Amino acid sequence: MKKSVFFGALTVAGLAAGAAAAGTLDDVKARGKLNCGVTTGLVGFAAPDANGEWNGFDVSVCRAVAAAVLGDASAVEFVPTTGKTRFTALASGEIDMLARNTTWTFSRDVDLKFTFVGVNYYDGQGFMVPKELGVSSAKDLDGATVCIQTGTTTELNLADFFRSNNISYEPVPIETNAEAQQQYLAGACDVYTTDASGLAATRATFEAPGDHTLLPEIISKEPLGPLVRHGDNEWGDVVRWTLNALITAEELGVTSANISEMAAGTNNPEINRLLGTEGTLGEMLGLDADWAMKAIAAGGNYGEVFEKNIGESTPIGLARGLNAQWTDGGLIYSPPFR
Image 1 (cartoon, rainbow, N blue to C red):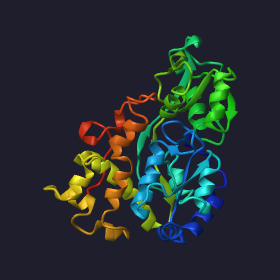
Image 2: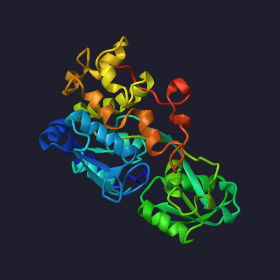
Image 3: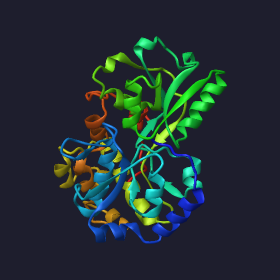
Image 4: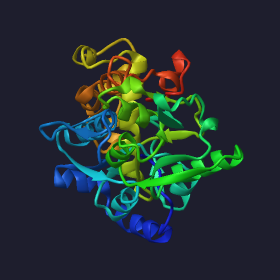
């Protein structure tokens, strides 16, 4: 869902340098619309409903940025991308930002010349198998056929895991999550491997989710987050601090339900700075004073976005875990608004 082999790195880097020079913030304002790259479809994270309306955890980040910059959370053009096309789309300027279950890695940051603005989901690569296979551990998968997206570093993680455990597998290459789901349910592969969150989201769409098991092994670190092109620091700041606004709002107890009341002023200076009732943070970003208020109002704070789209009350049923606030033992943490 997230990872692409770094072919054509120099070409991608060159495209990124040229596109960044244009000044994305000014482009988005002039266009009146944010072009946001998302996955081709992963329920809970980014997928269109029956009416063609995009919803999901990653989609909410796009909408928050549009609200912060344009004052309109609906002013977004969602551009579906695959593991192979997403980086070229961002580097060429076809999209302004990428919010697509993409893992922050050294090569993507340094070689491909992208700037990850933060982490909105801490994940790891896992395995899903049919219960009838009778497997309780990934170490029991010797000789298994494995559905895996082509052009992804998931392939590298998989190869490392099987080699280190002295077991073998046969890859079944697929392009998208939809194709993986089809092939897996048809029995073309014994196993599907990708981010554990993606496996949970995929399993939730099955007619009989209980017939499939997520194995206990998590074989990699996958810090997922939105990214922009190198060289456009002003735009990077806007996307970064919009994500931070959602995170900080949860920490400070600012919700979609009470934000109007809190925007009238509170006794907490950081809440006032966040919502623009004091200080000049918006001006520093080249945005209106109430930019963060608009971003939070678009879909709620980080916790609200999580619970609505992928939380334990949804069919996907993900616990907060590492994605709990730092005050609750998780890793979600924003620098101060001051």
